[in-house]
Image 1 (cartoon, one colour):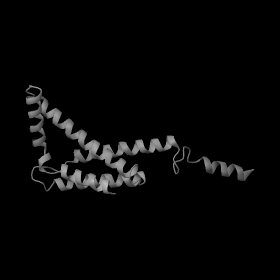
Image 2: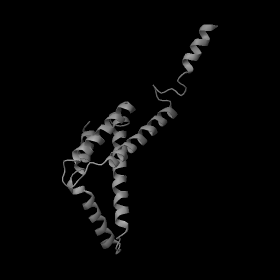
Image 3: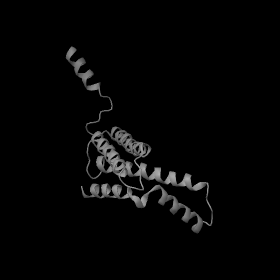
Amino acid sequence: MLIFLAALTLIYFLGTSPFSNRNSAALIRWTMEHLFHHNPKGQIFFLNNWLRWSAHYLEFFVLFLMLAVWPLRLRPLTALIITMAVGAADEGHQYFIPDRRCSLVDFEIDSFGAATAFILTLALRRVRGAPGVRANPGAEETEKASAWQR
């Protein structure tokens, strides 16, 4: 439970002013100019968006896994709902931060990260034959009906 609360704290912290779009673009510009001796005027927008979108996707992919796989092991649908609620709350709290903005695109990327982890979790459970996940949901009822008719 503590690791989940730490993840929520990190998500909330990353939604504050120091991690605004403008600040991350400045960091990318500095990195490109000082480490690579390259003036990336046209590349900053692309790199900044790619970095930010990747971070959103991975944050919520990992958050879902923390809820559904380890350490909490909630049901996948419950974990998906909680993860998406955290994404909505994160974007909602950014509405009140001066350097941030509430973005539907960011919420969609958060949701795609959680949904990808949800689909992978269900697929792995089905492949492994985890309890509660049947490969052929109607097979038992069909077998019972045919046995009863004999």
